[in-house]
Image: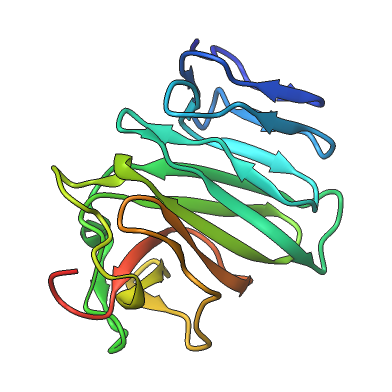
Length: 197
């Protein structure tokens, strides 16, 4: 299904089969009390999704390689009128700009997420996921959990948190990493502290 006009949902959105194609103009907006169930490799949003409110939410986004969500939670200073828009981008994060953070060696050559704060001033925890869908052409995508970090692009450079992340969960093929207490947004990508990982 492809939206040909903006749509706002106030209840539950259930994914069963097929993709929902959106654009920045023909945008899917999830209301403050809305929820999402059933997103999977077989069914997700191919494009941006906006969420209103200050409750935890997993954006059901992906691209043709599959479902690769991003989650916001633990709002501090949030309000029911807060709004975020997220999209999964299947492209080389290095193309956006260089790295100035001495702590990280490189960012992903495969992907990144945009997470824009459209309204409000909350601080949130952001959780990023990887699966076998993320691979850059075969083999394990994440090869060393201890060396995995998340980087943020400020419009000129990539850098990472100086306070560290919460526990990384999973394996080389499926897992997640959370950056707590984020107040500056979009874009974010996986990073490594050493070459070749």
